[in-house]
Every structure is written in C-alpha cells, then in structure tokens.
Length: 240
Image (cartoon, rainbow, N blue to C red):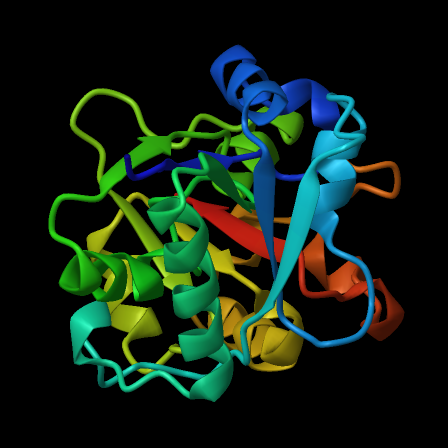
C-alpha cells in the first residue's frame, strides 16, 4: 500500500501559528521532509515544528532546493529541475512506495510561493494515484498584516501580491490595486523607496520583517529602514 504525502504549511515563524491539524499529522507520520535553500545551515521550517511538536524518533529527510528565478515559467511541470530536485523526488517517492506516510513541511502556506509545487506534478507523473493532501498554514502576508494591524482589503477593494524582484509593472500595479504586498524586498529596497516616493505613496507603506519571530521589526516610516535591517523575510505593504 502506498503511503500518503501531507504537505503542511507551518506558518511564518511562531510555532504557536502551526495549525492543530498540521501538528497532529506531524505527530503521526514517520518521516518529515525538510526543504532547504542551501546545503549547509539550519531549516526555519524544522525549527518551527520543533517548537510545537516532539519529533524525536522520526526520520528527518533534508532536501536541498537550489533557488532560481522562474519569471518566464508559468507552470511547475514546465520546469526542468536539476539533479538535486530530482534526487528529492526520487527519495520521497521511494518512501511513499514502501507505504511510509510523510510530511513535507513548508514555511507559511503551501499555496503561496511554495517550493513544493515544483515537485507536485513530477510526483504525479510517477504515480497519478498518489495520495497528496495539502494542509494550509498562516502565510507571512497574513501574519505581517496582523502584526502591523493593517486590513488588507475591505468591501470591493483589490489586492496584489508581488515578489519584489519583479518590479517591471510596479507603477501600474500600484495604480490599479488598493493594497499591494511586495515580498522579499531586501534586494530591491532602495529602488522600491524611490518608486514609492515618485508616486507620493511613502506614507502609505509599512515595512515588516520576520513577522511573528523573536526579532520581528515593524517600521511605519520606511525611510527609517537601514540596510542592516533588511533580510530575506521582509516585505512592504502599501495600503492606499
């Protein structure tokens, strides 16, 4: 009998934001797949679940995922994954084929910029009958808005969510949407500040870094953000 794969969103950083269903399934499975962007270093997703669930005795399968821009790629099945990704697909499928239930943990919510969906179609190509259940989690977007006490939308207002690296149409987006969430702004922060200044929207922007973590930072005047404040887990919410 083939095992079941659970894809679990573990939230943005605070272990208390892991859902009850996610925690229960992590307790029940024998193997946990932990995605990492680098071959060295620790996993934030793993540290989150360790703060909420006793995982002693479980197999921890670390999976290294080299991260690349995929602006021109529309669907995960169109991507030619490199050998590291393929190794993970084969390792996950091998365990499922032995009847082992697994959890694949991912920061935030699996449906929003999650590593897992690069693998989803590839696994189903190997076996269309695989049982894959996706457990939603609290996204960094929701957590950041909550911590900054911002309503993302009311009534018929429109929201746009952009990876900040892709700022080609930022002006058009800011003009068309009531709220714009710019994720991972650390590499383009100076350009972003200039663009918001040109559109007279600096006062409408809030910077949130590492929402829900111990070193969380919220800055309501984003011109006060210093270079050393910027990091991978940072975003800017622009609310008109």
